[in-house]
Image 1 (cartoon, rainbow, N blue to C red):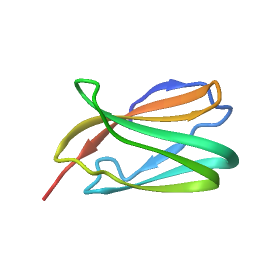
Image 2: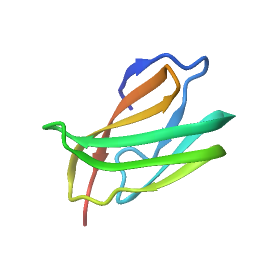
Image 3: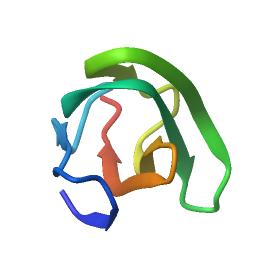
Length: 88
């Protein structure tokens, strides 16, 4: 997993990577309102969802095989990764 940006106090965990569709994000703490945004390599949003009072997020990638940027944001804190998706 390549972390591209991290302004959270702790490192969030994204697994599996690569994924076959469902990706888990462990936040390490309970955040009141977290937004997850997934973009393809040309910057188009393919998924955006807000979650409340969660410590583990389950995300179903709604696209085809490829590489994606996955960003988790909480107010001014952001963590971004590359995510590989393999569609069998």
